[in-house]
Length: 148
Image (tube, rainbow, N blue to C red; front, side, top):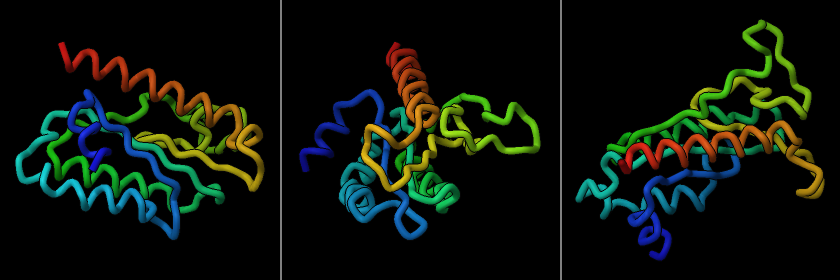
């Protein structure tokens, strides 16, 4: 498929999917399964990988979605990079769920955000958007380092 061709040429692959029914969406799962030919040749070995997800619920089983992405990347021999952004709680044992806080859900394996039932210019909140932006910057910098 065209997506696989683009992924083969990329310095990094960032997986993104909404969390539906506690896991990745059917579309991303289909992409995973379509990559079997790449897996046989280790075509993505040592390629940088990362992932993000969004759901309506604050918890929403986003950890399972990100875990599915990590397992897939590891099966391909990819190098997974987390966001490298501290939790909004600052290490305290009390979550800060304000939508303007970066990494308000304290994720370290990938970006996990939450959207209300509203227009995209309203949700996800500014903190979630900044979290995703910072992750993108980190992945771009790491891809450049790996490329040499």
